[in-house]
Image (cartoon, rainbow, N blue to C red; front, side, top):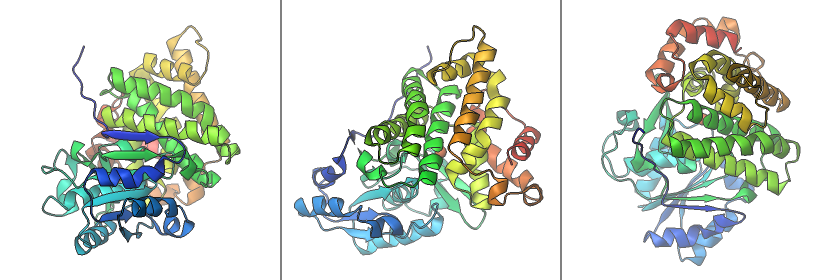
Length: 385
Ligand SMILES: [Fe+2]
């Protein structure tokens, strides 16, 4: 058996109202001045009230940066870092979807390491421990609350920089399904399909190992059963809880294994056309699965069976039935196509070569069960419109 490593936050609280543990957790790190990092919607929605109350109960007064108004850019990171420095904050608390959590991760290590965010693109470039970070997700999607990854757009180059380091894993994740109840249907679908893609890619990745497999298969089961239910019945706390648990497990799976070709191709779509991450994943997932199957039919068969499909007595047939089910799920959740979002063949044509180069440069496609050439990636982009 190959050796492997498992990394995760030192503490994960899961369950209804665990967000109110933020004060006691911040206190545990000896924090004197926490910085809340969030987005403008959450700042005005009342979601922060129990969190701020919990901090007050622990005699902590926080500063706040709520400028993460879209998928995170280097400008967000610069602004948030300035707030951290000006307010002399010694601990970060990210409340939101993947975007505020990713900005907080970047600021947590820039506060203790030299240079600018672009210096850290790639794997294991962070050399000094980051400020402690408590992550409180409000979507069931990215799993960023437990991962060693942050993705920040370099707006000067239209590139989503992938930064991976065990030093940026949040110290604490407070994973509270009550915070996901207010998600609109489109956000539930997009973020849930991001999580579903994490689970699938973690399982078929060349870096998969026995522990990441446990999380990945469980996440596929949870999400295939409960995501459609949470989408149809937004107030169903049981479906919301299981969808959030699936997203958490999918995060643990891919952070310890990896993502693969879908994510490698998805980031350039987001950087170039500003399509939400979960939507671009969903647009690519069916085509990329069909392409990748032949790289590892038995693993795709396992995924089909985790989705509750029957063993057809033939790995190839069963694996293909799983791909069909994934396409059905995406359709059922009414995720818009790329062309419906304005990403037409005419707009794709002039930039698709750069997008394929950026996809390959990210390293994620190298984890795919079937390796893709640049020409094959271009063809997959064109087929996914
Ligand atoms: Fe993702």
